[in-house]
Length: 223
Image 1 (cartoon, rainbow, N blue to C red):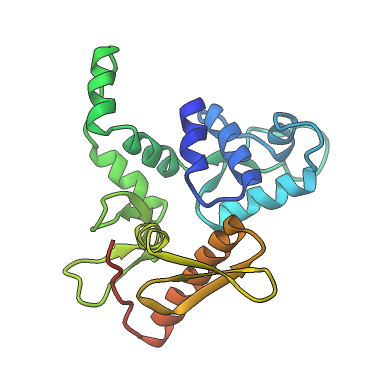
Image 2 (tube, rainbow, N blue to C red; image 1 turned 180 degrees about the vertical axis):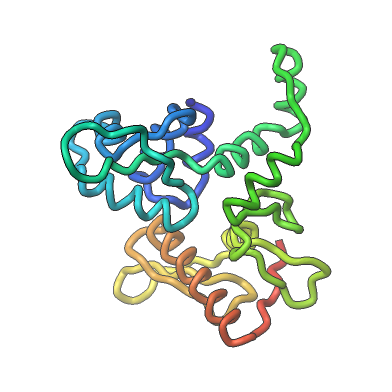
């Protein structure tokens, strides 16, 4: 699971949520309760934080709630059980299939298989599809038309391109301001560069949502 954790570290999710993803990924075949996950996290982690992050993951479509087994501990509802959304794992596996890694995989006796119809159906049932631009699995609501583009793009790809076109400057109060070349309506500030980037990601998402609501063009960003 080391390589999966490295993959998570390249994403813009909070560290607390990445820890939960890692636990769920290690137990992909079974559903875990909040307490199950909490016991597997570093000492000192608050249970309420775990519960909040897991519910946040559900809202984002990154974690799914699965059917609980029969519950015989007195009255009341059985505790919710959670699993990592298979799409997130599939996206990680796709990232591992670069030519270099595929060649190494064959040398190690690892077999790859083509995507099957059942994989597509599973994505569709989760409200996911492959981005027509980058080909990665993404939520259908995160796909949009970029002005002047021949095909749609996904939110993840757009944000990744934007982060490669940023300008960073220190402003008068010692804070840092970050902007995206070509996106005059988007900027963010923070005390550190990392905080700035995280804030910028959220600002880009909000800006895209506003553009979609108002029917405004979303301009392309030169990578």
